[in-house]
Length: 278
Image 1 (cartoon, rainbow, N blue to C red):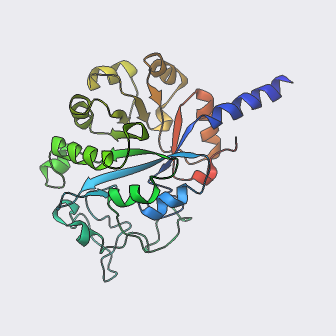
Image 2 (cartoon, helix red, strand yellow; image 1 turned 180 degrees about the horizontal axis):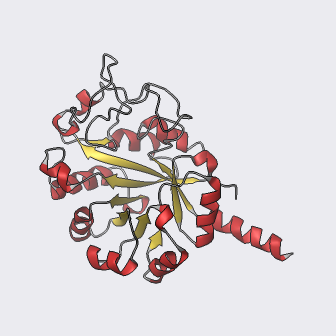
Image 3 (cartoon, rainbow, N blue to C red; image 1 turned 90 degrees about the vertical axis):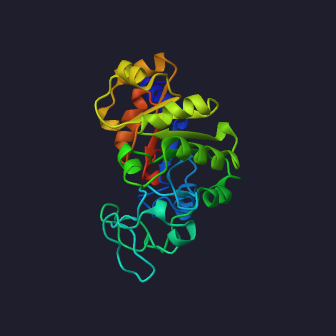
């Protein structure tokens, strides 16, 4: 076997071992964070994990949504009128009220390939009940911020985290899911209160591995940075501490291949149809 052929074979084997995660299901192809988006992602055999975001409703249901409000970019009310700003606070609405809004018909300005189909924000239970029987894992982001807690868009970190853990564990064993957050208060609390749950530290901005460990206070199962900030040296530094590296959100096949060559353990993408062939 030639050196070129050997290199291509090794790359193929490496790519096949990557944890390919469908971001918000398959946001580039179907309205985000919906049951349909999850089912769309599962059409692609390379996808091994569904990535999604969760918030809390007034009746303490876990809602699959990137924001704790109805986004004016993608949502309209039951009369078909686009919502405005942050006026529709999901934490002040019941799950039934939330389900009256359509977050899939409006054309998405940043994802022209996305299907336009009436879609509602489901509960986490609805999503898991539809797809948990399939051989798929889940990477669930707790959408917590200090500002949203202060402004009444979420419960306190402990209550929020406990509600999510309880909802997930009712339907999945711990080996089938990870919990992630940009709010490291969440991760520190989960580490102490639910030590069996694998945690993912999300970061946007400059990467300093030692600072991550110091600021977080422990080594997470996974470190998940913005992919353009990541270097081979970063990957190696986290690997030395036994931490996997799964960058977000990578939407071009060429860049996916470059990251695989850096040695990442997974890749989060809006476009599972662009995952390179093994």
